Structure formats: C-alpha cells, structure tokens
Image (cartoon, rainbow, N blue to C red; front, side):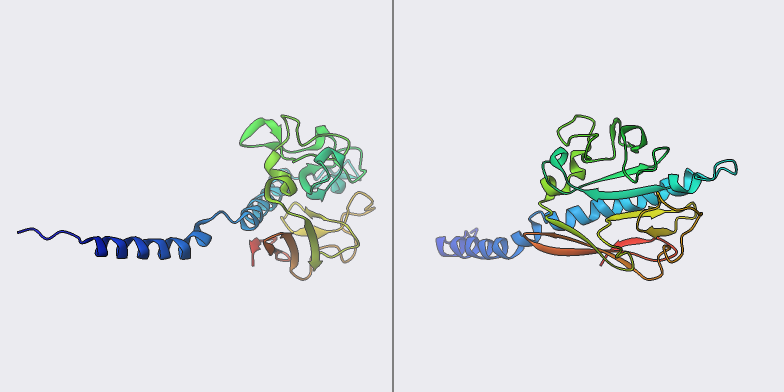
Length: 213
C-alpha cells in the first residue's frame, strides 16, 4: 500500500517553502547598487585598455599626452540632471570635455557611443547614447565621490597613460608629459551611493587594477 501525504504534511511543506522564500528573496532580488559598480569597473578597465592599445605618442606633437583616454562623470539637462559618465580622448580641442568625435564607440554596438549623455553634445534619450551609462536613471545612483588617492578638487575623472597607469585630475592643461604628483601614489576610491547605501570601487596605483571592495 502506497503512503500519501496528509493535508498537515502538505501545509508544513508549504510553510517551510514560504520561510525559505522570504529568507532567500532579498539575496536573489536585483541589487542595483552592485550592478552599477560592476558596470563602472568594466568601463574603467576598458578605458585602461584603450589607453594602452591606442598609444597617443607622437614625437612631432608636443600635445600628444593631452589626448590620453579618460572616463568622466557629470550631470546636466542633457542627462536629465542625473549622473552619467563618458569615455573619450581629448583629440584636439583640449578643453577637458568630450565632443561627439572624441567619444569612444561602444564595442557591443558600433552605432552607439560609450556615453550615457554629456552636456552640450549628447542627450541620454538620443539613440546613439548608451543609456546604461546614465547610472542615475538606470541604477538610481545619486552621488559619485572620488576619495583617497584620486581626490582632486571637485574633478570626477580618471585618465590612463600608455602603460595603463592611472592619473588623477585633469590633463588638458599639462605642459609636459607628466605633471608632478598626478600619477596615483595610493589607492583611488570611487564611492557610488543610492537609496540602498553605497559601494566602493578601488583603483590601484601603478597597475590601475580596478575592483569592488
């Protein structure tokens, strides 16, 4: 004779499943803060990659070092006042800000730029923008703070030289290949904050290795 579950046993199983679901669901639920950090780390690493493979050195150009690849955060009406970031090389204007011709192309979609929108050149709503890079809209990021080794005034940008070494601050006014004390000497920490809390991204000096703490 086969044994069957009693109603009491079925109820007990359902209760246990409910308890497990309640415990596990917060861990399974999407964590937008961490998703944003993972994306930013990926793009920091890609910026470093561009800096190394697209060496800007030109013995006939005294300003070649100003063209290094960099990642910059900002917000404006073009980004719906939300924090966005862009990857670019300051190829000729040397004003410290990108124009469309200086933005990196998205390797996953050649008709898009690696920018979530940038003041004066690209709206987040533009089909050519990478909307995920508007981390204010996509992930609810309310602030991005550069601290420790890369704290430099209110500048929120990270640049890499042709060896992949991280540089803090702006480079468009450099009158030499390297300005004193601008190569990272200590770990740079970038803090992303939203309603869930905050997460810290670290960029190590010399190697430029980016990771989440």
